[in-house]
Image 1 (cartoon, rainbow, N blue to C red):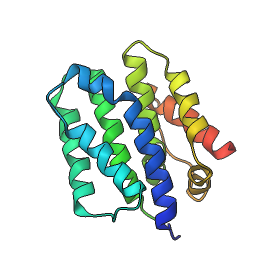
Image 2 (cartoon, rainbow, N blue to C red):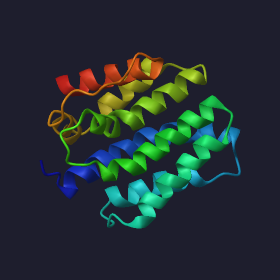
Image 3 (cartoon, rainbow, N blue to C red):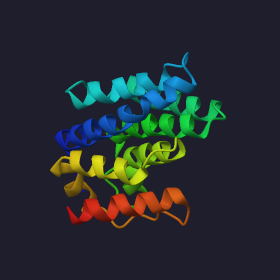
Length: 167
């Protein structure tokens, strides 16, 4: 399977939009940590045409460290949305269920962050689905079904994946 840069840019742009919606949740809880914002910025730059460089991967790893450094579950989920946004640029062309997580992960983590903050996860999922460019559904349909597990995060994954596959 081949993945074009245009497809990866469309996915990454959508992922960054999803993550940016919950970035304020992170910033209000961990105001001095800019790592998730930097990951979203790097994802946006790639989506806008910048090359896929080590800096993008480094920003993703830094946001992951930020997610692990906080004990606040809302902040952690918001930071993981940023990780997933930057990581979307590195979707692998492998027919593996694991790759599906790279597609739905940013919206999934954003929905979880909203829910943990007392807001509506379904509303966040609906927003993400309404904003998804056609390339996201087309990419997803090239991969086998994901394996989301039986947790709340898995339930959010299933909702996103099934709706994107139907779209």
